[in-house]
Structure formats: C-alpha cells, structure tokens
Image (tube, rainbow over all chains, first blue to last red; front, side, top):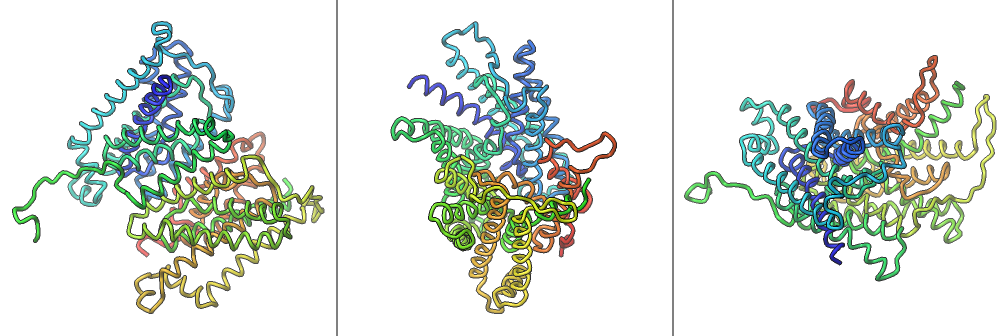
Length: 303
Length: 293
C-alpha cells in the first residue's frame, strides 16, 4: 500500500506538471493544443537518450526543454492563420507525425520496441529509498513550475494572454503583437511539458511510441477540465483525482477477476465519461478560475 | 505504375473515406464544431453489423441495414444526452465533448467485443482482371454502395421537405426558425443521418479489410484531411476532398521518380502533408465558402 501511495504521488506529480503546462496554453493563452503528448515524448526521449550517453541529468532536462521548445515553435507558426479548431487538428497531426518518426527511425531509439532500462539518476546514492527520493524530486520540479506559472499569469504578460483569450482584436488594437505572444506561450508550455516527459522516462524506465499516443493527450485534457480551466491549482487537484481513479483500476482485476483487456477499456471509458460529465454538469471544473475584479462601481455595476 | 489499378484503388479508398467525411462535415455544417466522434460511429456501425450477422446469424445485408439504423438512433441519443446541453457553449467545448464521446464509444466497443481482430467471414476474395487491373468483386460493391448513398443523399437534400429544412437551417438558423422550421428536430435528423453515413463507411471498411476497435480512430487524420481539403461544412466538398486525398495517397505511393520514392512506412504522414499544403495554399478548401460569407 505504501509503495502504491508513493507511485500514485509520483505519477500525479508528473501529470500535474503536464496539466499545468496544458492549462497555461489552453485556458490562459487560448491555444487549443492537442499535441501535448508530443512534448512528453520529446522530453522523455531526449532526456533518456542523452542520459544513456552519459550526459549529466540536469543537462538532459535542459536539452529536453530546448528540443521541446523548438517543436513548440514549429507547431505554433500556423496559429497565425488558422482558426482554433483547424489548429487543434493540425497540432494532433503534428504530434502523430512525430510519433511516426520515432516509430520508423529505428536507429534513433529502437523504434516500436522502445527504450528499455533507462537509468535512474542518483540511483546508487539512494538505494532502496529511491522511490521516496523521486517523490521529492517530482515535488520540487512541480513546485518550481507552479510558482513560475503563477508569477507569469499574474505578470503583465499573463494579463495580455488573458486579454487575447477574451478579445484578441482589442489586444491587437492596444498594440500588442498577438501572434508573438501566442508563440511565446506555446514555447513556455512546450518546455514545461518536456520536464514532465523527462521525469516520466526516468521513473518508468521504459518508453515506446505507444506511451505517447493521443490517449495521453486526452488524459491530460481530462485532468485539466476536471481540475478547472484557467485555475492552475485546479490542475494539480485534477491530476491527483484522475491519477487516483486511473491507477486504482488495477485493483478491479484482483477484486472482480476482470481480464486486463477489459480493464484497459474501462480506463479509457472513465476518461471519456469524465470529460462528458464535467463539460455538461460542471464546465468550470472542481476549482473554477477566479476572475479578479479590478473595479466594482459603488452601485454594484447596475448601469 | 499500373494506372487503372491505382485509379481503382483510389476510388475504393475514396468511397470509404467520403462517407465518414460527409458525416463529419454534416455535423460541422449544422452545429459548427469538428466532431471527433464520427469515426467512432463508423467503428460502432461495423461492429453492430458483426453482432447482427455473425452473433445473431442474420443475412449480412439485413444486418448492415439494422446496424446503420441503430447507429443513427445512437447518434440522436448522443445529441439528447450530451450536445443538447452544449448549444450555448463555444464550438471548442463541443469539440472536446466529442473527444469524450469518441473515447467512450471506442472503449465500449473494446469492452464488448475485445481487442482482437474480427471479420465478417466472407472468406478469401478472388480478384477478376479488368483492363489489366486486379479487382475483387467486393470492392466493386463498395464503390457502388458509396456512390448510391451519395446520390441518394443529394436527392434527399434537394427533393424532400426534411432535406430542404436541413439546408435552410444550416444556411441561416434564425431565418429557418422564423419560417416555422423546428430546428431542434432538424438537428436530430442530422445526427441520425450523419451517424448512419458514418456507419455505412465503417461497414464498407470492415467488408474490405477487417474490424478492430481502432479502425475508426486510425482514420481520424485522413477524415479530417478530406473534409478540410474539400472545404469544411460542404457535403460535396467532402466527396471531392476524399477523392483528392485518396488519389494523393495512392499515386503518391505508386509514383517513382528515378530512385526517389515516398517511403511506405510514412503513409500516415501523407494526411499531414496534404493538410499542411491545403492550409497554406487554399485554407478554405476546394469548395469552401470564402471568409465572411
């Protein structure tokens, strides 16, 4: 049970980072990104391959962020011309093409067989307490991402992004370069997403293109919707709730003797049903976005 | 390159894709959102046919007919349960809800029929040689069914009261309401038709190849590509887009310039390439409406 709890915390922490990244892109910056799994993939593969080549862990993470930001930059470019739903389809197509590339180019990372036995950083140092150490590592990274995004959302840049979300024409009229802001937001989202991927690779120690299918993107979307779009504390709550539901389906196997295949199907059904339920019944999520009121007229704004 | 063979392969592929693309574009035209669920309705239609034909032992044609009707009603149910409540939301929320629906349908299919590959038990198809091209009779049947479905749909849209009501509502909802059309009912008809069309598409794919829970989602990008190439929201555009896309796929893979050839293992990426080219050259598609129209 203790081991399961630690596993749950680590996975929830990793997904939280991914969800924070998505929340910043989608809800704060109105970038309907359906390629979140690609950032995970880039983070995971870059970090794993470089660490296996003997590069220090910190450098691996930074490189993962750098590669991911390049990919973010590329998929952000068409956002200038395209409507949100077109761009959403484009982003999922780009992520799938990247996955196809990893799958086909076997010289790079073993193709469909995936990378096995990815070494864990500092594992000889912590020995049997390694999982506990990893909880702290994930927590530290999560805290850094959380405070960074929190400051960023409160900053003038965050205000511009929310302004663009509400009415982009008005922000353009104020002389803000809407497109440039969106590209920056996408790059920030891509970098934080890669961090989650890197942590994932070194914890699970096995990655293959199957891990980064669109299902992962939808899982993170569910976490964001359940937690509350636009509320980054909500993202952590959403990630925790969905990870708990998602990982505890394994107990169904022991309780009801269900086949593994059926469990996998039920797991996906859970994601789908949660998306529908929350969008219909509670679209603002568990923790709705707090909208700051800058000025409230004395009569309550009845005019 | 055997031109007749490639052309016929294109025609078969276009027939299957066009039906799902029409389904997608119909929902987009009326409800103004890109639905990720239509491909899953195709999967559902194919599996329901499998259930009626192999499970209950009905005649395959009769089973397909039942499956198409049931899928249509399930589409209406999806509107009643989910999309009715999201009429006032943004298009993007409806898109995300359709992803939730897509995941639910796929996992229900997976839970009921398992992940293994199924088929309708037609046995091995022996090709006939026409103009030097190897053509299986089932593929002629597929092209025939798709063509008659499309012609039937065209006649339906232009010659029946319901068809005219659908066109009026998609043109201008307020005006249609003002003339006494019950637009909520029109929406239900469209869900029925769209999901029935998706089901036919799914059944045709099942006839030619085989069934798996991922058969719909694996065509997701291809379907979106057809719709965008043809002009989103335009039924005839979806047909044209499907043909252009299928041609790009089949000719692209068959074409050899010296040693240069498109790598076969990158076939799924062709959808992405065609998509990018369309968005760069003509974002509104072949038959799409101009901006502000």
